[in-house]
Image (cartoon, rainbow, N blue to C red; front, side, top):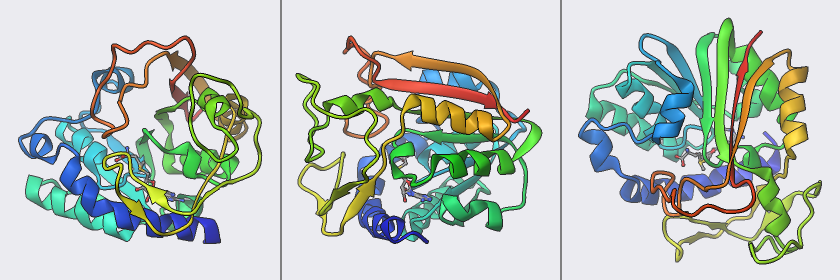
Length: 259
Ligand SMILES: C[S@@+](CC[C@H](N)C(=O)[O-])C[C@H]1O[C@@H](n2cnc3c(N)ncnc32)[C@H](O)[C@@H]1O
């Protein structure tokens, strides 16, 4: 495993317990899927479909798909996150499978094929190799399957200064940045005071690199949608803030067919 990914894993292990506390687990346990309506609409009916969720964290989205009828598998590098994902699945009485793996190595570990591969909210910045991610997605899909991702739009990197601080009042960042972002801790979007004392690393992928990676993996792009809203307000991925419409793309969704 890449040494930077290893460091990120420690950070995510450190955040898992707080997310189990701060995500809307009570709602999920009461049987309400936490996925926003746009994602549900764009992915469509999942009843009876097999779905693999890449970078599934504590499994809240994974198990939301199970509530909507899918047979689900989650993949994540963080053993602590998967501990909570398995606990949640048991509490909900759902027979989900959770696999601990670096997604960069998942093609060597997972040989099952799925109808749907899914990733959402806070994904691509953790990946050191976008081409390998696209090839992994293709590897996991049946020939008639599809991939769907909903994530922060790469355009937002123009608001990041050299220290990685976000300031949307001015463009001072480099959209084409190739250097890895290195931080001396792992911050948390659900608790501003929580900082896990490990180095963390993030990568920058342009929209062109993202789309091209899936095309080169042999997949067919069905749509690329760009949205002027964040869809979440930086507390948990489930706190919707649709009313704030910006003049630039904040979020994107992409659907690609395996063939
Ligand atoms: C922001 S969370 C995923 C978003 C999810 N929608 C959520 O908030 O519940 C990022 C997840 O990616 C996982 N992750 C980061 N790098 C990874 C890698 N190389 N392979 C697999 N999982 C990885 C982390 O462990 C973490 O659980």
